[in-house]
Length: 250
Image (cartoon, rainbow, N blue to C red; front, side, top):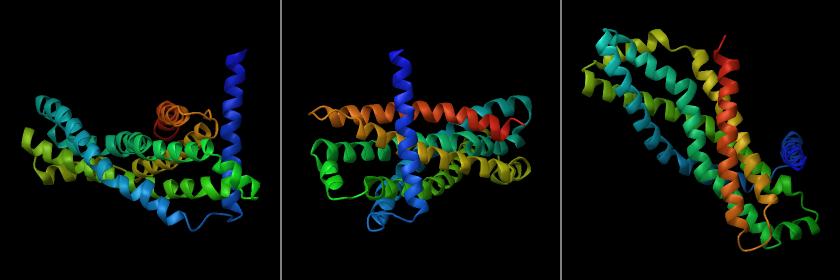
């Protein structure tokens, strides 16, 4: 029963942050001054590490596909296979995982520090809406930047796959590109973008809830960051499966 109560309480906290944050956005009650900083801090500064990580992921996928494609004489399918895998799955999911480690942990650390040092209580005592002031700039910044970063990651991963296909299996760039043109559809890209937006919302909500619920002691920040990263990854994997089923299984 305690476990059930914990689940209900936690999802209630997520729902509370979700509705309050989007209600603030709907009313345009946003901390506009903080928004540009959050876009740079949470989004722009993450591009390099995301692109670097996913470029090598695309190379690994291409290596495995090229080996089997050459064996069975279907080398002209490698480019399409890599592009579809990056657009549907690896681009949005791995981008989210990297952003959880960098941006989600940052959100949890910053807000939990404010809670422990009583800054959030001070803001409330001054009549400041903490959702408008703290949550909405971070939420909007990731909703804007994560799809853009995901597009960069899809491109970089597919390009890395082209380089590996050329090096390992001597598949020409023109053959690789023609394969992408034949197999990759617009729905694959739009599905990946939809995933990235959902993941952005999840990262912010989970990080904020963990920060709000952290204990007010010296270990509180570490607990908030650890729980935010762990639970965000779990949610991303679960939602990735559900969204893949809804978007691509039919």
